[in-house]
Length: 430
Image 1 (tube, helix red, strand yellow):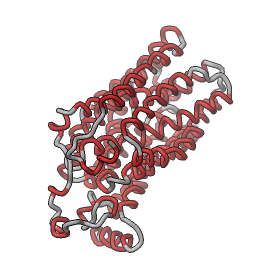
Image 2 (image 1 turned 180 degrees about the horizontal axis):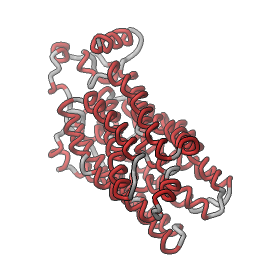
Image 3 (image 1 turned 30 degrees about the vertical axis):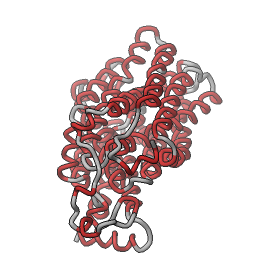
């Protein structure tokens, strides 16, 4: 029955539009339901958890960072499992385990349990579920991949707009522990049905090609021969300069965007911005992000990738500086728009860069390694600011010095980022 429903959906859709756009909608929902593993959701739980368990800001940030770091090293294995069993099967398991992780996190009784809960939420949500969603879109699109990724990443903007206020409301109504149980059930309810009834791993599985293009050799398409799918192995990718340029740039973005998500409310309130205004920054950023994502995606499909990548890194640097200049509602709103643009670049590029430079054939293992690097960056990001707060109760110069890292990565991208000549589908972007 399930397979009949899936194939029926493809048959109905292909009479009207390319079925890959359905995969984009499912992947966008996947990014949304990763919300319980994202920093913007944790931000509203920091105070209640700290107060309930008697944990300091630095201890909480350390537990969060250490747990995220541990989770990061499991992501390459997730990528290999995606390559072996397919993204649909992997995401069904990941979604089930993310819901369980939410419920276990709500039962945390001490800092060790909290750290284990952080690790599970970050691994299944921020790591594996986002990896799977990006892999799905990457398989179904090539020439329109940037635009498709931009639409997929709208799920993150919706999550930024909904999960923090939803979490706050659930805390007020039921307490922080029961809130996590409810978030776990919502994860299952929202994402398991579309995974079961709509998703196919690759367009070749149903006789289609990326972007809806007509197959040049129907016999090969019908037999699903993997030779038609371009791409480097992980070992081959590791021997290219571009892998390390993308890796350090993505490490920088993941590290510093997470820093801002985790600490921006604390930074702004110490600079005189009201707590309610600081919390509303997430909503303004989400709106700005949603507006900018399709434009960033179009830019990736149109202009040389290294220049778009460098632009995103530069905006990350500007965000770090601008958050230290927020002193009232107006400056906070201006920062919120810039940070929304920053998120639009980061969320669109995170799934775009790996298939762009290394192809689709072994994307899971390459993407898993790349995602590991990004999550390591995310795990380390909140620590310098937490230490600065504990030492001098101010993080202004720490944030401004951190801005030098993405600027240096932008320069590296312009100078050295190039794709292998064998990936002909992207040569127009070189």
